Length: 94
Image (cartoon, rainbow, N blue to C red; front, top):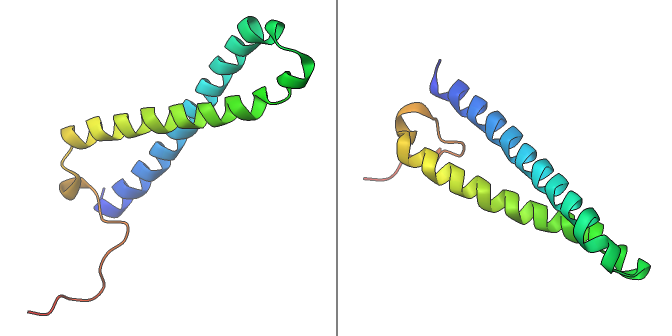
C-alpha cells in the first residue's frame, strides 16, 4: 500500500478507536452514576447528570486517545509510512 492509503486507513481507524473509547467511558460513567450516585441525589439534580457524564466521557476519551497516539508515534516512523494530510503546495524560495 502507498502512503495515502496508509494515511486514510489510519484516520479511519483512529476515528473509530476514539468513538469506541468515548462510548465505553460514557457507559462506564453512566453505570457508576446509576449505581452509586443517583440514589443519593434529588430529582432536580439528576437532570444535569447526563450532559455532565457525556462531557466527562469525552474528556476521558481525549486524554486516552492522545496518550495512545503518543505511544504509537514513538514506535512508528510517521514520515516513512504516512503522507501529510495538509501539504505546502508552494515551493520554498531558495
